[in-house]
Image 1 (spheres, rainbow, N blue to C red):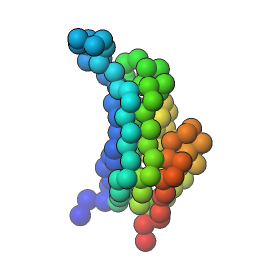
Image 2 (image 1 turned 60 degrees about the vertical axis):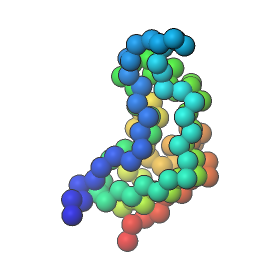
Image 3 (image 1 turned 180 degrees about the vertical axis):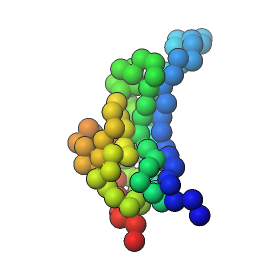
Image 4 (image 1 turned 135 degrees about the horizontal axis):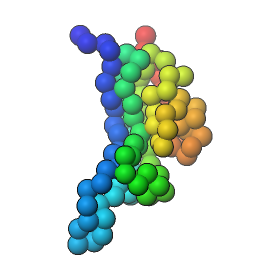
Length: 104
């Protein structure tokens, strides 16, 4: 088994052009009621942008009611505009009702 890690659930904002209803942006996503297990100390869950990050960060995207299993919760494996630990991710308004449990 590969225990180096892997990503959880990540919203990605990239330049994908414009369609009939305007620019294709990462907005209005509600990521909820999932279980994510990190087997190692790498891997990220959250939101990342390489184009117009403000549209994504202010775009009503929410993570909540998810359960994470991880070797450490203080590891910077969550991202919302920048990498952060669990406590900071929650303080940013994400995962108000989410939980992280330490793998045994």
